[in-house]
Image 1 (cartoon, rainbow, N blue to C red):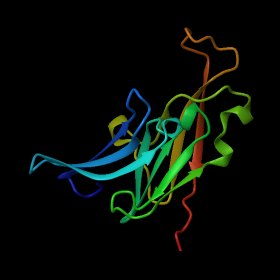
Image 2 (cartoon, rainbow, N blue to C red):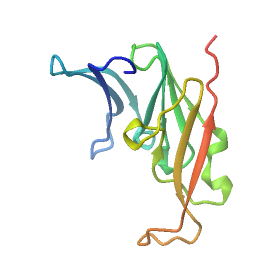
Image 3 (cartoon, rainbow, N blue to C red):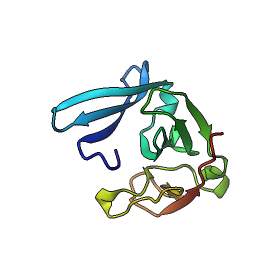
Length: 155
């Protein structure tokens, strides 16, 4: 968590081979205690269980962005780490099919491990999408789609 060096948040997706009991899970690791603790498990259907990226937004608000079925982006937002309400919202302007692309692959967000960080009040999300006509065995061509999401106030 930002400003708390001893608390690492780990996000994992549970997607069993039988496609049952899928979930987005958020764990906290305490380095000083060498202990892992489950903070939140959000049950979901298999088609909504693609992995994504988690970003803290404030003291009790954060967001997980994923791309269910490798398509339109989805935001899971709310008090994810505190056990409060979490809502699921499709990000309507992020559907790659509306851009003439067959789908999307990976979701990326600013990350200190790759040399970038996000600033409070701004959220950038990227996904790569195969261009029309790309063959499965080919590495490209693909397009990089960059979105800026503006968090809404939770009044």
